[in-house]
Image (cartoon, rainbow, N blue to C red; front, side):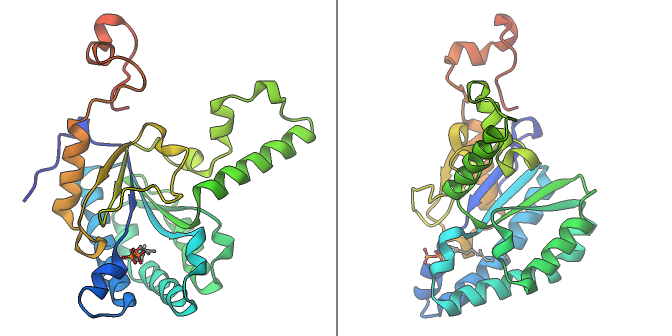
Length: 258
Ligand code: FPP
């Protein structure tokens, strides 16, 4: 069993691009849907493990804006799987102090997914032990486009002066910044080395961890390996190694894990 890193070396916010369900299934002569079913088992395992070691927030890229263009049957199966997950995991989520939130255009989800989603978000709203964020009908470009649209509206209405727009202003228009800590670690399974329109803004200073494992095979130990990898990194945020390794001596604040 792979150990978790010490708590003070843990990422606050982990994002996962859960890739490889289809390939995992095809390699076994199974329909793609079976890969998604097994992928949902990995979701349960990873949520439990992240909560147990003390990760503050976990975002799972469960359905992208572009996934709507997949074959109708696969989209329907993914929606049904999501509905089932929300119903079956309700007690686990509430019993473990997990707060469920979403990013993305969840208005597009069918009512049979939206209803249990909205109910569980509301029922778990006061939970404080971990935030579980499902990225649903989510696209990083779409989110940035929405932010630009809202900023333009605010500007036209006289509430936002273009010269006053800062990085913090833009961030305040992103759903992620309103509900989640900064993204520290991004994991992608299945050997692909791409961001695929996930957290485009949020990955600015995230550490990236890629694994060959397909998502249905990704387990607790794989999460610990990713967390250990993160703990071994030196995060410089544009500064020098000397600056970040001696923050107290230089009086430059703590640019470390937090
Ligand atoms: C990518 O694999 C995965 C998805 C598009 C869906 C992710 C969904 C799950 C893991 C299960 C349901 C989620 C929850 C939260 C219950 P892919 O199909 O693109 O795989 P491939 O690249 O091998 O074809």
